[in-house]
Image (cartoon, rainbow over all chains, first blue to last red):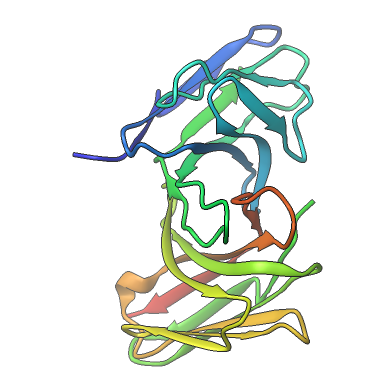
Length: 116
Length: 113
């Protein structure tokens, strides 16, 4: 049963704590992404990775960190430096089509992070 | 930065009516994609249109692309209550990271039974 799995579904964090959101895919996709979605808004790119051991900052990387040690996994750490971390976080993956880029992304079901 | 702006922000129609959503973007693109998001869930891919295509159909969906105006539209025909969701356009910028998707702000569609 192929897909992309995010965990946990809900996460509560105290101010000043780091938390790590999990994202795993068994679709054999090279590219993986993290997006943040605030209520009633679109998705903003945090980080993306096109190959193991390499990743690039998106538009809102400050206060976040990632790693890509395995092709299947792309965890996101929300650090205490992120001043407004309460949001819905979405992980996605896609095949990497070098020639055309004409491939779709597959999304996980999201993690809702709340700072208490 | 968000590449796309969608219009309208919210749309309410009756079952059986058609729904049209528009998306404008800022830079040249490789392709434009439309996604659907049910409340509190992940996004699901609906349709992809390449920069050299002008129109594409998939079931009750029709997408048009006008690269000269940097705009696209999504038409859902004969809408159903189950079509209620948010709809997002996303672009893959030309010459950028191969699969880097940049999303618009979305249109919230409510289909009344």
